[in-house]
Length: 254
Image (cartoon, rainbow, N blue to C red; front, side, top):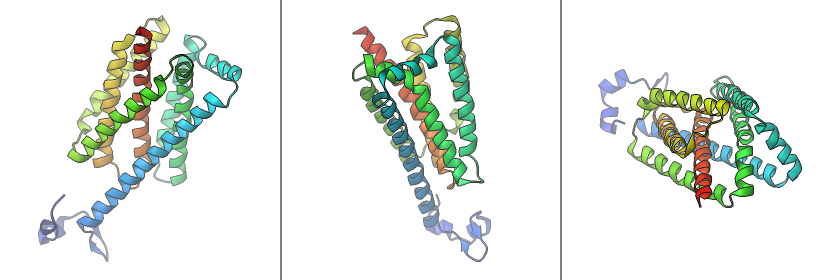
């Protein structure tokens, strides 16, 4: 960002895109304040989505009768085709939710997108969290703390350094497609992709966090805080999913 002297120079006033008829040039303090407000709203909505996710899972894992919960888990995971259908449905719902969240026509539609995605994540997580809560002791809180530390560290570093990780987009897309292909093959052919794949997915999720945090800092408009929160929530959920699996794998070796 340019300093005040540069900002108020005549050459800058002539070329600045921040012009408003009748009001003149918007000063750099107003621009910084608007961006700060955007960041606060983004992370507040992210916190809200995480709180909703935790609330849904806590209700399902504690308030729903055990027999009903077991039936739901069995329905979601009964055979390779059932899980593929669940994954396919989740991908479709994710696409719809992200389209709604990125809608510029209605704030209500954006919130519906964020809410829909959060509920979809809660459904897809249910079998894993059920197994972890019943058979792996403190795996969930350990994974949650590890996720929070990693996400917080990467967020702080990116925001302080103002690093631009937009160049990672194409590589993350290819990595995501490769990972999805391996997951589908493992479901269809029944082989275990193992702890090394889990470690690679933790690295991929970390890359997505850096990428989306950079976009929050540099790319999103000030009115896109709901869409920005959804992108960050998706990355945090992916990281938590594989850290939890990693913790469970370590407990299996004890």
